[in-house]
Image (tube, rainbow over all chains, first blue to last red; front, side):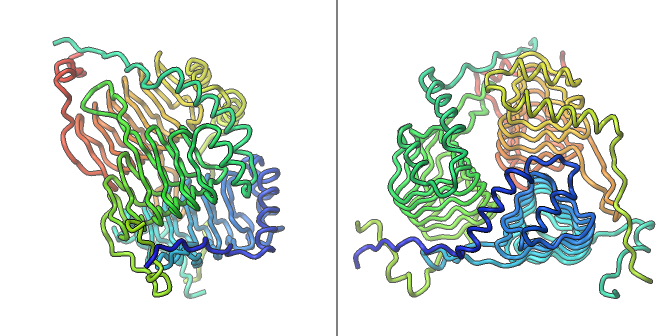
Length: 194
Length: 194
Length: 194
């Protein structure tokens, strides 16, 4: 059989999606990126204009990359730290007080490599309440980081992380339970009771 | 024996190399980096002017870092994704439809640490046809990523990767064979027959 | 027990610290970051003005991020390479000829996750004489990389590294002793004799 040279795949995105992202790119470059660090309200406003659902107190550093604001949901007092890349081709959601530290990559898309066309495959990411994704962590598509979980610095997470556990490594593995100090244990949130 | 303080090593690069890189740095800053995302032809042109061998259809994102354009060869429809660092102190070559995803570092140089002078040691990198180097992967000096191989997101590769295999981890290890779907399997390229 | 929503923690930093960092941020953006690569003396000067202790011959690339210059000490001929992030919330010290290669993150702070407040915890980092921290390495808070040690590219270091050893991986593990060639072995520095 003669060798073949399959054509590159067609774009995965609609014209509307592309135009909105181009527009967001311009707004991001001119109004978001150069904003002073303390102007969290201003950046929340810009993101909301582009369809993000962002509650009060959420912190988004000016160096954060957001692929599609309309696919971002951040609950009260959640945080995206410096140089975090929120590659939200599918929705990405942060719960209350969820924190993502510097340089982490939340990667909500991959490609199906059983095809030479490498078609895009997307899947949402959820970082639940009180979870902490430490510095320079990779979170893959479809992953839920459970409530109160801690993902150690430089870990790579391809599967769900159980609530109130500490995981680390590449791939990330269970290290220990997250035990809160006495002062916090009795005020630990009981999400499921709400 | 008295302690010694060996002198720092002399520069590893010729004046010509330094001048060309400085010139490329200026051109990159002014003409390459700010170019709009869709201007792939323009960036191919700039790289070719500096000696890169780049075939048609190759995609180079404006945020890609290229150390020496004259050490870059990209075959038809290959791709260097956003923020890829192509540290091509030695030649780096991408085959047809080879894809390198965002944040990956192709690192064609190291230092000989059996000497306190840490002399530079360089070795070429090849990413063969249809291979996919996923997001935030490290590829070390001298490595060949074989035809159709997939290097999983966040992996670190220090040795050659066999064709049509999937590897992952740090260091990257064999995970499974890359099996193409029926639609693709019978049109799988047979490079060696060509 | 009703669910609770603990208040975010108060800032960990004094007003003086914040003002000085804001000032350094401005100076960095205007005078440090755009300086040409060869202007090492100029960047040493700027850092010294902000309280860094930097000996002659030290190399700091213009893309290096320094959180607090007053917490940085660099001995003679030490080097911080391109895009290194020196997150020196606690002091970070490099010994003579210590080298930190591109993209590495020296991270002198973490958070106590036994509290929902995630209070900041800082701890100094030391890279001793002749050590080499290779590309894209993570060095955690409190770590000492011993004299002459080599931390392989893409490793993550959470514990001290023994002198004259080579470590690699995530977490980094002992690979082998660092043996110098004949030419260097007999001039190997004997720091503790000095």
